Image (cartoon, rainbow, N blue to C red; front, side):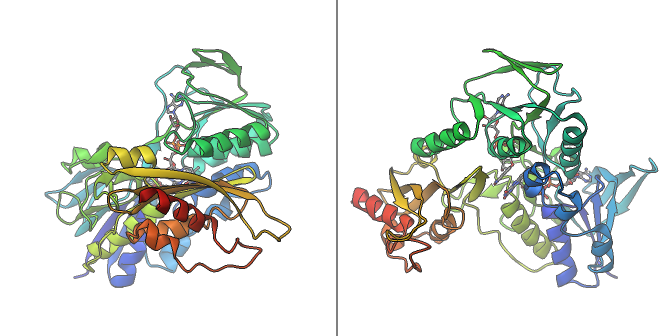
Length: 446
Ligand code: FAD
Ligand code: NAD
């Protein structure tokens, strides 16, 4: 008899897992329950879909429901909400959101890939019709529709994290006045101060007003009221972080771990044998510290899903850990980071040293060259490379991955400083900016 695999959630982690299972065990029955209308879309592209008036949401969909069914043989059931799991009976209970009917189905193995949900501040007005979060494709479509129908002139973004900063550019592209309100004293709070200053300068240069140490008290009709001042707002975006969707797992007796995410081992198996969890609903392990962390990133979700799917289909694979590699575009700048920040390195018991250097994106004699600011962190005790952050107009987003590779592999700063990196004048100086930073850092670690 063929095995039946049930997957809850049909985006990055869920569809990666489902696809892997079908690949390893082509005869298996794979059912994906997704409460929304869409599966397998690139949420990461939504800021650019919103900024482009001609952008079509269909371009964000990587795999349609039809292709998942017909080409990959996955039984995708959209508009189906899973409402319970009986771990003893190996059964999930679900509701067809179109017909309203509730049913249940048994499984041999289960993968929970329920993702995360936006955190909304507990204040009045967050459900007003001009107030949005950005998480699902439905959210992106709703924001774009609101802009088309209402032509908002003033946008207030609450939160200066990844979504807040990316959406500041997106709203400016749509000709809005943009104000960011952040409760902490700076954006990207753990970053090196010189990199933060360049982020702030980039916002200022592009006409974005940003207020820090600012507490939002309520949202009135077209106004955001804070402890400092009131801000006019035709549209409000709440970009105040995410929390894992782990309630379903918790209610069925599955253990939660760090940040209330579902606890998993390196096979992505939960505390209940035969049940796996992957993506933004699950915890990760930090490759440098070996401690549990929560990393709600698409890069990690895809790998989690792959590992969970392979193990569910009995092909032993381990998730090797994450180092929080991430990057984003801020107007004309690329901002990127990987590994530990200086404060995280101190918290984790290292003896960290940080250097911050400015180097050129291209060789001295090349016509087009721009400064790149590199902050790099190493450990005095072991000499290991621990972390890096960068900002610059060009050559940052891909360059961070060289450093990420070295950190992932456990290289020392000294080893990294002699990496044989390619060079030609349009692409870098003969000593690449990351190698210059490593050389300076190496000197301080002695
Ligand atoms: P989700 O995408 O949250 O999918 C979970 C799915 O499960 C949802 O569709 C939900 O409807 C469904 N579900 C939940 N509960 C149930 C239930 N009970 N029954 C049925 N279905 C259920 N990451 C990067 O690495 N780089 C980026 O540049 C980047 N940019 C981003 C930009 C934006 C605007 C956003 C919002 C996110 C961005 N991310 C980025 C993060 C990335 O999108 C997420 O990490 C990724 O989508 C997580 O995938 P997931 O499958 O774990 O969860
Ligand atoms: P975030 O954690 O990046 O930032 C949230 C920000 O909101 C923080 O600066 C926090 O201090 C602030 N905040 C929280 N409550 C507040 C309040 N009441 N008032 C004012 N400020 C408040 O979260 P996000 O921007 O919502 O993004 C969610 C997740 O999506 C990120 O953690 C990231 O993993 C992922 N993401 C990644 C990328 C990328 O890699 N390029 C882009 C977008 C989103």
